[in-house]
Amino acid sequence: MSARRPFDSLQFAKSGESLSGGLRIEELPRLRDSLRPDDVGVQYRLSGCLAAGRPALRLEIEATVWLTCQRCMVMYPEVLILDNVMPVARNEAELARWERLDPLLDALVADPVLDVAVLVEDEILLSLPAAPLHAEGQCDPDGLALMGLS
Image 1: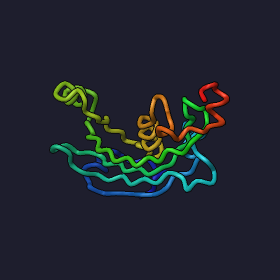
Image 2: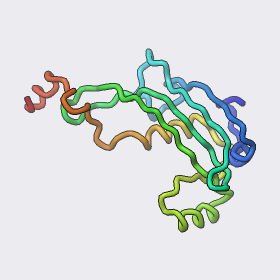
Image 3: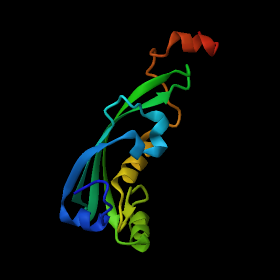
């Protein structure tokens, strides 16, 4: 199945099918500033499955995004390895019922024309830190000096 051809998310979840591939920068416009043309790109695998008896999508993503450290203001690569299982509700009413039972549930409403690139991009954006920082002791000394922190 092609990632570029939209498909019915609920039918895909019920079928147990899977698809995998890679996405290029131009396919992820909201991440354009966080990706590099020379990077491999974003790799994904989407599978239909059951989660707690509900049809679900399992989305696995591997990507490297470039973030600006809020401590030293220097860009650094952040490797993302995501693995999310999202139940697919038939409609808004079913989703609301599920969320009343489990307020932390990460679920989707069925989409008859799901675009995998948009789903992958959404999951990456949701996983990014609110305040990106290098690991402790990894900040660029020149960046810290410019910020008056060294």
